[in-house]
Length: 126
Image (cartoon, rainbow, N blue to C red):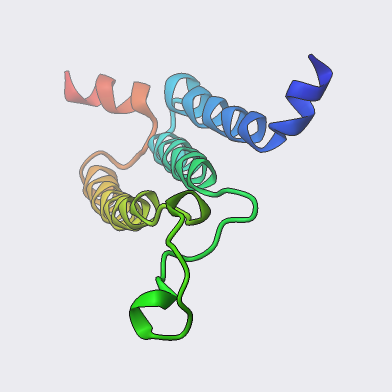
C-alpha cells in the first residue's frame, strides 16, 4: 500500500491541489478568493492530465523512418501520445480566458456594490 502511494505521489499532490481549490470555491465568501480557488482547481486538472500522458522511456512521435534517417520497424508503444498535451494547451487558453472574464465581472461588481464579499452583495441587492 505504501509503495502504491509513493509510486504515484504526483497524483496525490494533484488531488490535494484540487481539494484546496474546491475548498476555496465552496467556503470562502470573498469573490476574488473564489476565483483563485477556481483557478487552482483548473490548474490541478491540467497537471493531472499532462502527467497521465507521460511515460518512462517514451520518445517523441517523430518517425525517423519517414525521413530516411533509419530503417527500422515502427513500435507505437515507444511513443508518447501528444493528443493530451495539445488538449491541455487548449484548456490553458480557456482557463486564462475564464480568469480574465471573471476578473472583469468582479471589477464591475465592485464598482456597483462597493464590495466583493458575497454576503454584503446579497444584502445590497435586496
